[in-house]
Length: 147
Image (cartoon, rainbow, N blue to C red; front, side, top):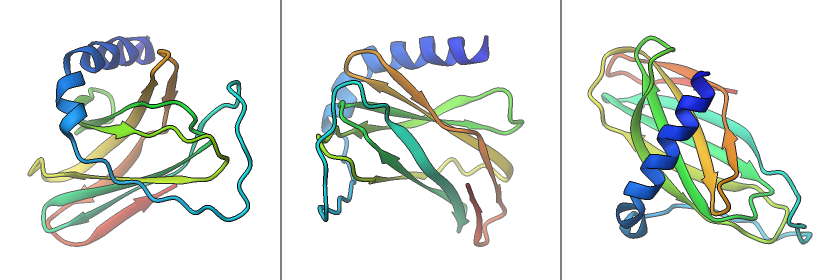
């Protein structure tokens, strides 16, 4: 039920934030060694998602493979691991090759203590992709969490 609510919320955000996301800065990196073309039915996957705390900010990084559709990534934050709020969004760039794409997001929420994050990607055809939930301790000193 929570996934359905999150997808509905993300869809609403996608529709209402289209003008915001079009001017938002997108950071990606690609490595073009030995590429193969993707078919339209290839499933995208978040293969790495990490968070690092430094000076009160949370630095999120995730890698996606087989992302052939443009769309938006919605970054959700929670203080209890169950009730998530939208922390921000990032434009997702579809590419017709089978290579990892790296994305970055900085959360300047100013929250202290343990924080939980998850990401939902909505593709241009309303397909969705979700990450697992990760946690990071935000104490103003350098900490990290990976999967």
